[in-house]
Every structure is written in structure tokens, then in C-alpha cells.
Amino acid sequence: MRELIAYERRLRFDRLKKLSKATKITTTITGMPHGSSTANKIEDGAIALAEVEDVYREVIAELKEMRSELEELLHELDNPDDIGIMRLRYMHGWRLQDIPDAVCISERGMYYHLAGAERKLAKMFPDRVKLR
Image 1 (cartoon, rainbow, N blue to C red):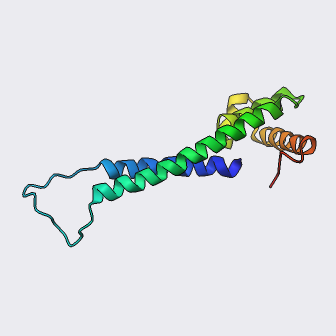
Image 2 (cartoon, one colour):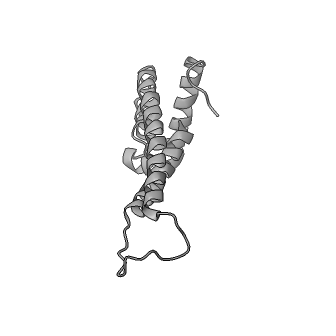
Image 3 (tube, rainbow, N blue to C red):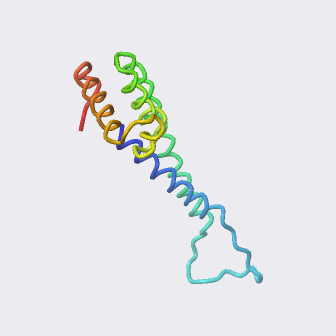
């Protein structure tokens, strides 16, 4: 899930970049073709954007499925701090550096809770939770 969250962020950025390129239209005074390229940049940009958006939708659907499964598993944890940190990280997609300030613990404490919760879930559900 960690890799998927990072991939989703990269795709979101790539999607915005392609959207910007696909919608950028420069007017020409003469209306004559220019340059040696015969490709239509706007059309190429729209195709690239559509491809990125297809992949993005697939990743979002997979993340949604994983998050619903994780929500079920979180009910098995007994420590509310573990549950809260896991929710912020994996359900809401927060960056690791933002979590300690939000829950008023040290960065080291946040890593302790996160790693502990992941280990507990992996022990309780070895067939459903894989640690890397």
C-alpha cells in the first residue's frame, strides 16, 4: 500500500502536467503550420492525458479497495494511537513528516506506533497483510 500511495502521488503530478500541456493552445497569426513536425501537439497531449487518467483511475480504485480492507483490519487493534496513526497514513494518505505534529507525539514515537501496528496486523492476518 505504501508503494501504491507514492505511485498515486506521482500519477497525480503527471496528470496535472499532461493536463496543462493538453490544454495549452498557442495562437498563430498566420494560421500556417510551423516547424518540421506534422504531429498535432494538442491531440498528442490529449491522448497522453487520457492514458495517464486511465492508469490514475485504476490506482485510485485499487487504493479504495485496499483502504476498505484496512478499515476492517484496524478494528482488531487495541491501541487507539496505533489506529489513529494508521488511519492518517493509509486511509487519508498523509505524509509521514506531517503526522507527528497532528497527533502531538515525537517523530520517533510515530514510527514506533506505525511499525508496531503493521507488525500486529501482519501477525493477526498473515494471509492478508504483507510487510516488505
